[in-house]
Each structure stands twice: as C-alpha cells, then as structure tokens.
Length: 307
Image 1 (tube, rainbow, N blue to C red):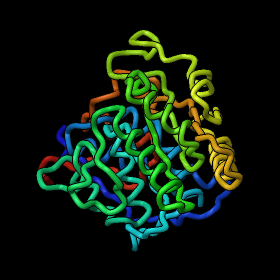
Image 2 (cartoon, rainbow, N blue to C red):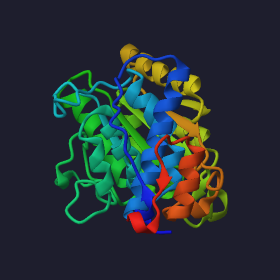
Image 3 (cartoon, rainbow, N blue to C red):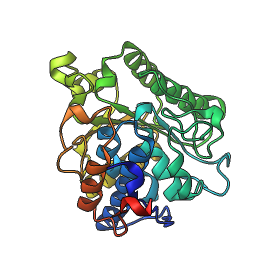
C-alpha cells in the first residue's frame, strides 16, 4: 500500500482555550494524535513516538485556559509564550496550533514538504503564526525560554508566563543545567518547565544511554519548585498547571518544573513505550491501523483504480 491509497481527511474542528472538565480533553488529544499520524504518513518521514506521547500535555496546556494567547492576533504583546525545546516533536505542536486556530488545519498536509511553513524542526523564519522560536539542537530551546522569562520579569516587568517542554533524554545536555541554574538564580517564577519523562530516546532507554535520575532531586537542588504527575492524566496535569499559576501569582521566587511521566507512542498500541518509534513515521498499513485505533471516522482505503 502507498500513502495515496489512504483517503486522509483532516476535520476542520478548532477548539476554544477555556477552563474544561478533565474528561473534555480526551477528544482533543485524540484529534491531535490523528493529525500526527496523518501528517507523518503523508510526509513519509518524521518522529512518531514523542509527539503522540505529549498530545495530552499539549491538549491541557493549550485548551484548558492555562496559557494566554490570541490565534487571530498571534503576536499580541500580552500573550504567554511556549517553547518546544525538543524541536523534533514538532508534529504535536503544529497539530495543536492548527486546532487552536492559528492557521488552517488543511496546512497540516504540508509537513516536511519543500517550501512548507511546517518543517521537520520548528523554524521561526518560516513565518508560522504561534511559533515563538526555532528549535532543533537539544538543550538550546530551554535556554531561549529562560531568556524570555528573564526579559519578561526583570526588563519588561510584565506578568507574562513562559512555558517550555524538554525531553528527558535532553537533560543529558550540559546547557540544560546551565539554563536551570540561571532560572533559579534570577528567581524566574514566571517559568514553567515541563519535562516529558517517557524514559526513551533514539538509542534506547534513558537509564541505559546515560541516566538522568533522580530528576526531581536534581531540580530541587537547583532551586526549583518541583511537581510530578502522570502526563496522561488530565486532572493531574491540570492540578500542576494551576499550581504553577498560583506560584506565579504569589511570586515565590522559584521557577517551576513539572515532571510528567508519559509513554512514547501513547494511543497507538504497537508504538506505545517502544523507543524504536522515536524517529520514524508509520507505513501506510501502520497508519491505517493506528487511525482505526484512534477511532478516526473518515479513514478509508482507496482501490488502486480510484487513485
């Protein structure tokens, strides 16, 4: 089977950013996961595991009323900012931004295509609304996020918040801990650092490649307010984000880190918790199975004569 044998439909649904009951996030996250599979099979390249694993985090952060943004006015000065430091996870960010209304959902078809605004790593130079910075080299994005938070708190003296997500394997980079040291030293209580703790990276399990444990004790030692949660539990994610907002309101003088335990490939049975899905897309046959598991209402196979 070829990708063109799949009749792939992107629903035009967009979602409001508002307070929600925990159970409301499930369908949003499922739609994001469907988008990820469709984008990757059409592109024929890209990362599957991490984007699927962080769909729940993005659903709660962007659609639960925790982050301030205006899709129709993407560079609104009062917005909060989000930095995907683990830039290779960009399919989940692109799907999230589209579902928030920053650009047409149909543009998701162009992932990794020549001239597309949706490149294989986020490129600020491509002019994609909602994309705050370019990220690719692991460890650099979180440093950029710290710089943003530093500027907002001490130069602009604004109440903007900065949210950033790193992978757990990314914590093996030395620049990550330089950023952590600076965030604590400058008392950046406007910074919310989310660690995608799926215990997987491209070469294997994180402890076997280079252990970064205990993550919580390390961040505590660096001067962070530390929280841990199940990264697929919407209520726990919401509680952590609410606590960060309270930390910011109270000006506690500490950055916040949320260590979210996740499963790579979440939502697709044959990908879940398998590091080998870190950096490859599904085949058309695998995409069909994945979309069936994700209850896509439109996925069908086109007979060769119809192509």
